[in-house]
Length: 316
Image 1: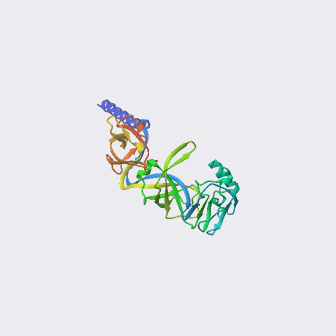
Image 2: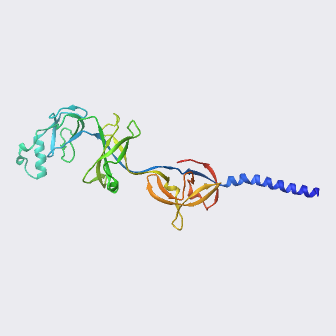
């Protein structure tokens, strides 16, 4: 009997030792995963567009017909009064330009039709001056921009594919690499009634100009600087959102995720709703506190053993 007890004791000890030794080996062979902790939060949908800072109270100055600048009398940054001359016009050179475009002799162009100088329509600061002595001034773009105040706004271009979601009154944020603060709040206050073609090299796209009026600004927002704007087109409170890349689709066209449960990857079928900027809204299948595996494409099968590398929101 003593030998039997001794044998049973030896077998039990060996089994226990085998279990203890096997556990680390199993853990070591499990796929390491990171998880995303699901929680209820607000979600928003935005349209991103680019533009430039410009003076809010400003006026663009155009010429009525092409002309050649003679003497430029002001410079950008200079404060001027209403009626001050901005530049004079080389009448003879302008007459030749007009005659050449019309295919007639310069003598047939009446001199009285050519302005002798262009003056400031308002008092303020010259924010931009697109005039150089001896160069042709086109009617297509402003020859000068004069600002009568210190406030600034953002002029943006919105791609036609996004226009259906845009409306005056929507909240917006503005950012830029040269700005002091990370973001500035504003409101979309104007949308142009007509579209235009915007060219980039040989490519073109249809865009609509719009204006974002800032509710806060500082002297780092200088007219002419590039700005990136996000216009908020929708939002919801207490929404469960998970990043797009965590959601898979099975052979039955069901959307699903893998949850981390007790050291295993467990398939969980879900239903999604709206698509937000940073992920899907989940309407069924998940609850706050669930831990969604961030690298689902590495999972071979439902119930696969996994080891937890980290947990939390975002990049945990």
